[in-house]
Image 1 (tube, rainbow, N blue to C red):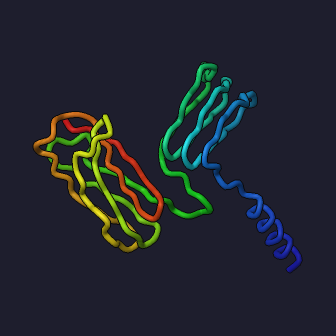
Image 2 (spheres, rainbow, N blue to C red):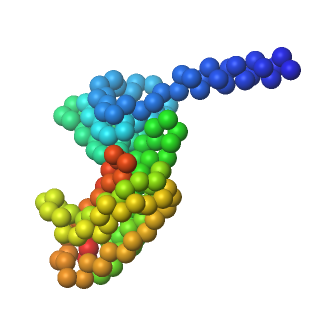
Length: 177
């Protein structure tokens, strides 16, 4: 009983100190020691640091990762930068994906709503011009949803599907062959 209680108190202490990702992060410290590191931000990461050899570092941000002059990943290091949703308080965020990608005429856009809400989903071209409004002010329940985008008359290029719900926004990237 005493061991169980001590373990529970220890777990609660660790959980209460769990770090919630910041909205934006600027990384200036260099990773000198061998090990694995994960840096996360809900929106953006800006880095001007050095990743030394025998070190594994991943940057994960919801909107963008910018490697500024001064950033260096030395030979023998493993560095990855992933622009994808970052969980806040253990909640699953608004998510967006599309398949197939690249596509020729039609692609399926799949999105996950963490809570019921009013949804907007549109497609922009590389210049930010809206080329398709797929969902406008539609009330939808929480969960996984799919919609097909038929882009037959639109020229080849890069397009961004954008889903917006409950003051959250997720942006993807599509390539039309």
